[in-house]
Amino acid sequence: MWAEIKDKKAFEKVNKNQSVASTHRNIITQQSIGASVLSDRRRTMRPASFTATSLILYLFLFLLRRGTLTTGEITPLRRGFYAGVCPEAEQIVRETMRRAMTREARSGASVMRLQFHDCFVNGCDGSLLLDDTPTMIGEKLALSNINSLRSFEVIDEVKEALEKACPGVVSCADIIIMAARDAVVLSGGPNWEVKLGRKDSLSASQEASDNIMPSPRSNATFLINLFHKFNLSITDLVALSGSHSIGMGRCFSIVFRLYNQSGTGRPDPHMDPRFRFKLNRLCPVSGDGNITGRLDATPAKFDNRYFKDLRRQRGFLNSDQTLFSDDARTMAVVKRYSVDQKAFFADFVEGMVKLGDLQIDQPGEIRRNCRIVNNAPREETREAVS
Ligand code: HEM
Ligand SMILES: *[C@@H]1O[C@H](CO)[C@@H](O)[C@H](O)[C@H]1NC(C)=O
Ligand SMILES: *[C@@H]1O[C@H](CO)[C@@H](O)[C@H](O)[C@H]1NC(C)=O
Ligand SMILES: *[C@@H]1O[C@H](CO)[C@@H](O)[C@H](O)[C@H]1NC(C)=O
Ligand SMILES: *[C@@H]1O[C@H](CO)[C@@H](O)[C@H](O)[C@H]1NC(C)=O
Image (cartoon, rainbow, N blue to C red; front, side, top):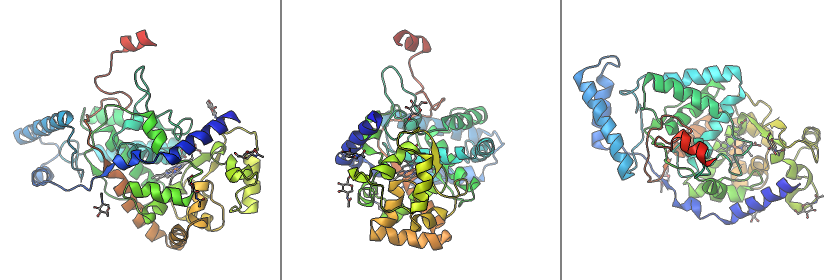
């Protein structure tokens, strides 16, 4: 089990190296007076009228964006950011997500997960979406992402539709935020207004992701400390983990707890024996690590079933079950959500907004293609290198 060992070592390194995350700043957005004037003016404008005013406004916003590209200043995020410049943006994202999830229900979960993996690593900046280049190893091959993150093509589809409607206006970082919200809504979860106005990064770092993203083996103490570095509370941690109400996980992520929890040679004791029996059949000792199991009993429905399952010791990941079994503070929150779905939904929304607020001071742009920075070397150059 070479891959297994390599995986363990790397994750141990992650657990020691926690300083990277502290460079993050949780920017709580405050509208500047100028920005609020702009948004008020836009709200009063008819979307379809191409008046001189709207042209000037558009040019102004365009220049503003170019300006922040060079200064690397953090743009304040706000609701309805695209109302004036691309009024149909949120509708386009919602409809594209609806089509994708009709084709494959799981794509909702897969897209929603992208928000977590994008926002924790250098803020919500679309860095996760960048393909590797000859000179840059991005985040897609990072420990937590390789053979695991999926549905990037759904983001491409959204971007394509948006580029048709409003070329060069909507950032890939914002697409992730809108699409994640829509995935939750379309799975039966809560709806909320998202703050927008993010820029797309000019680079991505595999190492940054490796150093930050938590392992499925993480215990409650580790997760509490990690989320705290991002100004996310114990309540936020438990509510956001409730995202595992939808989607699937691989055998690769759980075999250690089925057969050798913490090197004991024994399974995780916090597991219902009948549930373990089912998982043993799904994930035999030397079986295919890519086989997937459901993260809760209702993986296509966003509900509080995940928390009910944790109380019955039927959590899929160690990082799930630990929230009920290993810490009194997280356990109290799990118990509350298991009997109060409204409370879960309200806290989940709050957590997603906070997660979406993570930004760092760096140059940005509106990518034309979410996989490539705008001034990427020409195709010929790349072919020449590879
Ligand atoms: C608390 C720390 C977290 C850990 C350790 C964790 C870990 C994982 C792991 C290991 C998987 C399965 C991946 C695989 O086996 O290939 C997974 C799936 C998933 N995660 Fe998390 N996660 C955490 C928090 C979050 C958060 C905050 C979100 C979203 C806000 C999220 C959303 C998801 C979703 C939706 C899936 C299913 C994806 C699919 O079906 O493609 N997770 N997570
Ligand atoms: C952390 O979050 C709290 C509550 O949302 C907020 O009041 C505070 O300003 C945040 N602190 C930082 C450093 O972002
Ligand atoms: C939790 O995990 C951390 C990091 O892996 C480890 O150092 C610590 O001993 C664990 N705590 C408990 C209570 O198991
Ligand atoms: C369980 O893990 C420990 C430590 O990683 C290892 O020494 C031991 O050989 C493993 N046991 C089995 C049965 O795989
Ligand atoms: C899963 O599949 C990928 C590619 O199909 C392969 O490279 C990888 O080794 C597999 N992972 C596991 C854990 O079996």
